[in-house]
Amino acid sequence: MIFGSEPGARAKLKRQLIRSGMRPNDDRDAAFRRIIHSIPRGKVSTYGKVAAAAGYPLYHRAVARLLRVDVALPWHRIVGVGGQIKVPGAGAAEQRLRLQMEGVKFRGRRVDMEKYEYPLRPWDT
DNA sequence: ATCCTGACCCAAG
DNA sequence: GCTTGGGCCAGGA
Image (cartoon, rainbow, N blue to C red; front, top):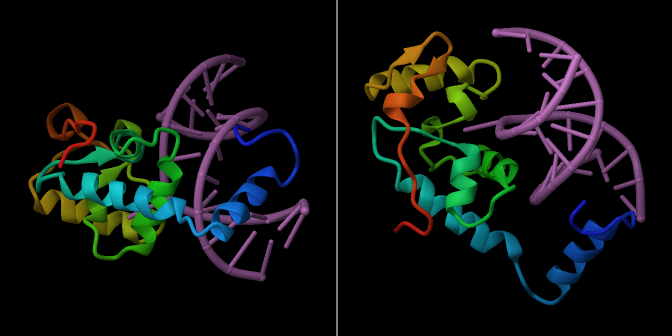
């Protein structure tokens, strides 16, 4: 637990930040969006790589949350490590279809990351 | 203030 | 290959 061992430490810090007028999530999400938009058609990246490239390693789950909430993002170009599709239910088939339409090929259930992973650079514009 | 859950990830077995 | 357990973040109940 990086926020300390005390119970509720994380929630406490969150409330404190909000009370002081800061929105720690906004700049993170903005950074995530920048990185996500930099991935070209026909290429993919992973939740973890996006988070790290945005300057926030360990925040891969926050990337997933953003993709779920912000419908304007090219969500289908983000997959799990190793090229695994992580979208639940019917969305999985749609993601695969969208990727294939962009020319991305699969090896079994996974995206062929050797050929289609886009090398993200930190603080890319 | 917990508790729960999720489009995660990694190391082990 | 697959399953588990542990770690991590955010939002809602």
